[in-house]
Image 1: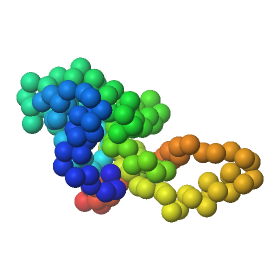
Image 2 (image 1 turned 30 degrees about the horizontal axis):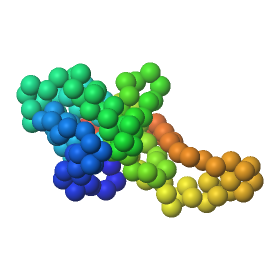
Image 3 (image 1 turned 180 degrees about the vertical axis):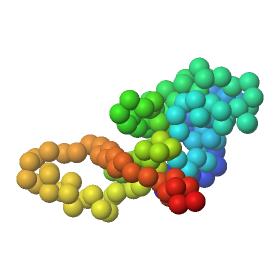
Length: 148
């Protein structure tokens, strides 16, 4: 994520939407808020188990479904890789996919992409509702490991 949410933001939004606040939902929300990269459900579950050892993958998926319905998270699918989840930013996004470790990083594109979106609307009458671009390459950690 590009900017950190205040702790408890996601669970507050879940509560405001009328859903029960469970320990499992709190753990999933905490992991998502603290994550520096997009995580798949299995990774999310493993991190949530550090907070709540009894949490299971089904609880993680149920929580992701609720958060997705509320527009608080989004799933990024790259090729045949499992979907990866992150807190939704609401802006156009660039995803940096490391082909070595499979990590997915988020980079906001609002200022960079806005002129292109304006051009598309003016020339084609097409209103882009969500932009999701993926660049494949090697992350700094993997690059550093190759140089060792």
